[in-house]
Each structure stands twice: as C-alpha cells, then as structure tokens.
Image (cartoon, rainbow, N blue to C red; front, side):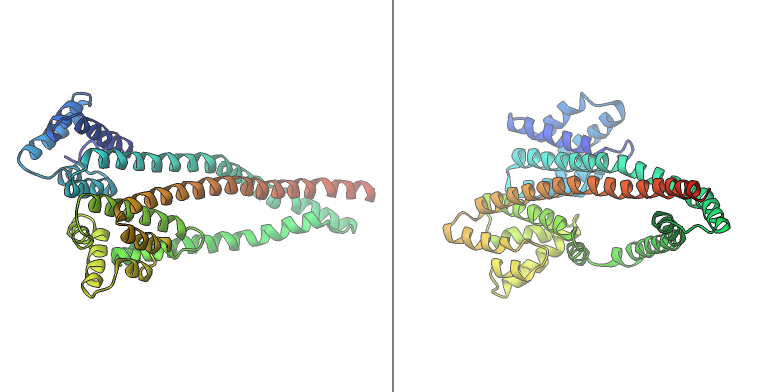
Length: 343
C-alpha cells in the first residue's frame, strides 16, 4: 500500500474531499469510493484496498497510516473519530496542512534567489581574492604604494574564509551526528522541548504545538468529553509518540489534583497565555470554544511571524551581498587609481 507515495498536497486534498462528502451525507467508504474514481490507476488500487479495510472494521486513521499519510493528518483523523465531528475536522486538518505547505513554498521562493546570488558572489569573491588581488598587492609592493582599506578587508576575509568554511562544515557534521545518534533517541516531549528552546526559532515550534493541542482539546471537549477523558484519548493515540507522552504527562498530574491551567504553566511547550485561556474558559463554561479561538489566534500569530521573517531575511541577504560586491569592486578600482598616481 505504500507504493505510489502520496504527496502532502494530495493527502490534504483527499482528506478535504472526504470531509466535504461526509458533510453531504456520504458514508466514509462511499466518500473514498467516489474519490477513487478521479485517481490514477496506482492510487485507485490503494484506495480500493483502503475501502476494503474500512468495510472490515478498521479505523480511518489506521487506514491512512497504512497509506503513509503525514503523522499530523493521521492524528487529526484519530481525534475526529473520538469526538464525532469528522467532516469539519477533516476539512480543518486539510486547510492547516495546505497552509503549511504554502508557507514552506513561499519561504523557499524568498530564499532561492538570494542563495543563488550568494553562491555567485562567493565564486566571484574567490576569483578576485585568488587571482586579481595578489597581482595588485605584488605590484603595490614593487612600486612602494600603500594598500587601500577595501583591498585589506578583502584580503582579510579571504584569509579567514577557509577557517570559516571548515568551522561551518564541522558544525554541520556535529549537528548531524547529534541529531541522528542523540536527539532521535530522546522522548518525543524532550525533543519538542529542545526545539522550543532554540533562540529566535523556538517560538515558531511553540505556536504550532499550542495550536495543535488547543484545537484537538477543543474538538474533544466540544464532543461532550471531560478534560480527563480527553487527556486519556491523547494517551491512547499509539501512533503518535508525542500525543501518547503528553497524554500520560497530563493524566498523571490531573490524578495528583493539579488543575489543567497549573499543568500548562509547568510545561514550557505551550504559550504562556494558554493557562489564562483555560482558566477563563473553565469559569465561563465555554472551555472548548475558548480553546478553539486560541488555536486560531496561535495559527495567525505563526503566519504573521513567518511573513515578518521572510520580509527580514531577503533584504538582509541582499545587503550583505551588496556590501561584499561593492568592497570587491572598490578593491579592484582603487588600486587602478593608485597605479595611475604612481605613474
């Protein structure tokens, strides 16, 4: 079933179509059967097997897992199966993943041209530093002329470039070793805690984690479950280690008599405002709605931060490249003026 791998966009669109058909009164197997008619032959066979599994009593989340769907989408489906609002949850999950994909593509577009520009500039810099400047410096020394500031700067950068490149390569190798042999062996909660603690970028992970927890708790509580029952369902999601560990952590503290808002204050994974939202929601009896609105707020903040970062990164790279190009230009042009004065 894992042949003909599903792209994330295809996964999201399939889940959206299923949600729309469920909203129109289709059963799950009927919705999958209708969607399969529009698929290419390979995926049509996969969906035929999936429909067979659904009719044999397998859960939709397990079927999607067998198809190799993204873990986040599978988790959305798992929770939707518990609270009953499948159509709405499927559509929301699809929108969420498509938006994430769109943000990634926009970020890649923003970075692609500057990265090409940086590579071209570095190539030009190596040419100037290795071939042109040594000849000018040798000529200066022969004629007894002083070097200009820009030539000195370029020579200094050129002399430190191999050291910087080596340090960068070593750093990347150390990070790769740490990721594959240390980080991946940590528990899911510890992994996400470390990601949240990364300077500058940690807040992005924190917003995504808070959004995910808030929206799932909102659906579960809105389906009539208690906080303890909702947390138990997190623990019961065996296909997602983070959900399982988080559910266990929350459940153990709830059994000790700790309130949910106090637990949120103890856990650095979540936005600080989450505990205030939970406290307010419990007072007015609308915790599910408060959590849903807060999840939307977290997602909006995440997109705002991504937009701001993209607006900041590109001009910064252009400024750096511009300074380096001007320095190279002046390091070549000024020696020519010096030579004319010497003559």
